[in-house]
Length: 210
Image (cartoon, rainbow, N blue to C red; front, side, top):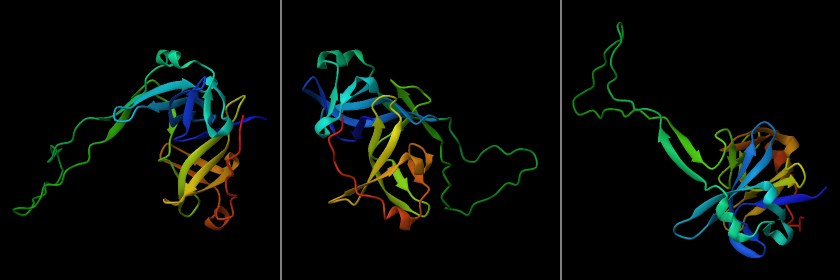
């Protein structure tokens, strides 16, 4: 079965013309199926475009190649993400009947209540799960690295395996099957392996996928 190796930061080409780098991957939460890629282009003012996974023809030679011409990319939706506060909390809060009133010493700093926030996104489904290179990979006991690749089959676009990077200056990449994934979220992926078992995972080899 053909595989697509989707590496964050990888160059994306549309009919041979460079159009950006892979920034994020959009996943259907329950199926773990890739639906879209988010490709960023530009230096200071980056523009992010949401492309359907079906637009990928292959990942041969470690590049991500599209089957659409570069001039058609403008017809795809733009991805934007902002943090929106869900209401505000003031201190002190009004007391309900029966609540105890607390006094602070003179000069004591008044504690600031954290205001909950959520991400508002455009260009993708509100229920979509978005993975990127900031997604942590954890075993049963500790963090073991950051997500660097997602490997999917080229027909159903289901995640077959994942790759994480260890180290900063000269990172090494290790791979594991999606079979070991216990929990998947935007912030972390937890695998059902001990640290000793995770240390035995094979190093990832950059193969030519198509």
